[in-house]
Image (spheres, rainbow, N blue to C red):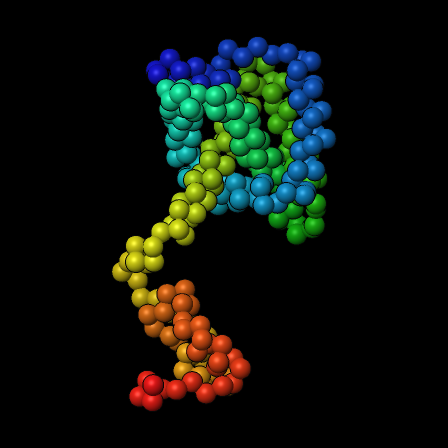
Length: 239
C-alpha cells in the first residue's frame, strides 16, 4: 500500500518522468484541437471545477492529498475484490477524464487572466481563453528540470478540483434520496404558493400565503386539482 501510494505521488509530482518531444508534440496538438472545443460546448463539465478553483482555492488545496488518497484507496479496494478487480483497470482512463476536465477549467481561468477578460469587460469565447491557457501550460512543460513538476502540479490541481465537485454531486444525490424525516431533520419547512394554499380551495388573488409543515409540496392532490379548476372544496367541518 505504501509503495503504491509512493509511486502515485511520484507520478503526480512528475518525478522520474522522462521527457519525449514527440509525445509532448502529440499531446499538445490534441489538446489544442480538442480542448477549446470541449470548453466551448460542454460548460457543465468544465465550469464547476473552474468556479471552485477561482472561488475556493483553500478547498482545492485540501483535496490535493484527499484526491490522491481516495484514488489509491479505490484501486486497492477494487483489486482485493474479485468482482471489482477488472474495474480497477479503468481507473487510469477515468483519472485522465477527471483531470482533463480540471485541466481545461484551469486553462480557461489562466487564459482569461492573460487576456484581461474580467478587468476590461470584453467578451471572449471560453474556447479562446482555454486555448491561450493550454498553450501556456504546454510551454511550461518545456522548461528544463522544473517543467515536469510544474505541469504535473497543474494537472493535479485540476484533478483535485474535479474530485471535489464530484464528491459534492455524490453527496447531493445521496441526500435527495434520503427520507424527508432524515433529510430535513430539525428544519421548519415552508412552501410558498403564489396563488395561495391550493388545499383550501380558495386561492388568493395577486398574493400568496405560506404553508407550514408542507414537505416538498406534498399537498392533497385531489383538493389541489379542484382548486385549480375553481371547484369548491368542503371544509373539514362539512366533511
